[in-house]
Image (cartoon, rainbow, N blue to C red; front, side):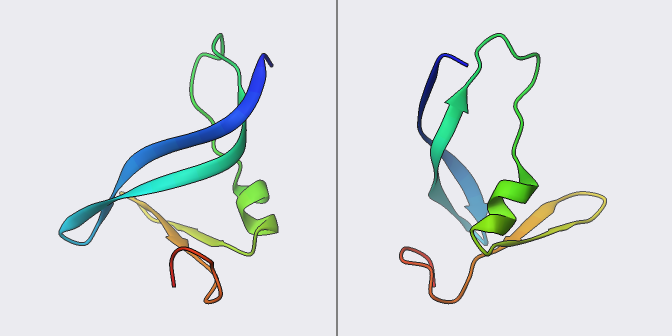
Length: 67
């Protein structure tokens, strides 16, 4: 690990795209692929569901940015 910081990326949201920010991410530029910790997201009270094509994230109803 070289650093820790926030990562922003575009995510499809219906017919639009929104900017999703993941806070306190670890930077590992030599890693062969990008990893998203489902456990870390669940610690923030997000619910994650997978199907054959998508990963669906449900944010808590009291989320400060997305309701």
